Amino acid sequence: MEKVSIFGVNIFNIDFNEATEIVKNFLKEDKIHKIYTPNTEIVMEARDNEEIRAIINSGDLIIADGIGLIYGSRMKKKPLKERVTGFDISMELIDIANKEGYSLYLLGAKPGVAKRAAENLKKDYPNLNVVGHHDGYFKGTHIGMKNHEEEIQVIEEINSLKPDIIFLGLGFPKQELWINEYANKLNSKLIIGNGGVIDIISGDMKRAPDIFIKLNLEWFYRLITNPSRIARQMAIPKFLISVMLDKNAVK
Image (cartoon, rainbow, N blue to C red; front, side):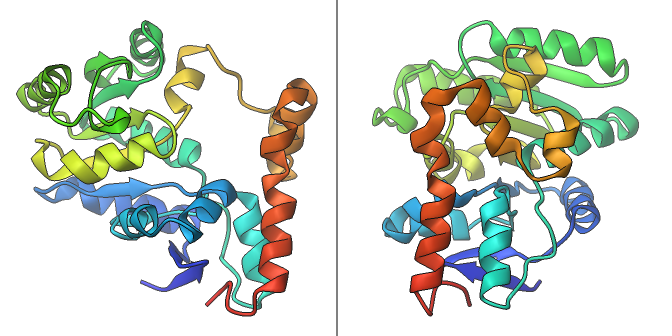
């Protein structure tokens, strides 16, 4: 599989259809597969954090969730094919599960959110088997409390339900740390760290309108609807400037 290394993070150079085929094959195998969805902020953090960089690079599928990664790769003449978002591949996984009978577990977000997300999924996808859900407010590795009894209970519940797919929405870097620690101890076929996807499915968070998505302006929509995010949105221009100034940024 061809990869493009951006500040040491190895992004799979694939389009959405190729990503879909990869996850379909993952679900046919009797072992766990880890999916990470880095954006520009995550790549910049990983550039300076060897542990996080190694965790992301250990993934079985690493997709370019941020449009800045696409722009940065093009600037250095090593273009990624397209942006493949964690949200889009997550929704594709739901569709596959609904059609082919795979089961899903939702883990993350604030109390009550995963429950509402599960209820909405059952309404919209009548054949989807959502076997369980749990909020992200349990004590565990992601907050520096490895092997806490609450974490062990979550793992035991997941393994008793044997979900084919796990959505993990703890936010970066908590979800990456948790996946790295426990993926191989889970009785599942695929786990994806997908940030706010559970919040969007529940209705607690809105995604940008389609026109903003098509124009790769989701960041702008988030900025105008929530100006307090300006510090986070500055990550894209900072990232692109860093790419321009570093001849070895993209390989």
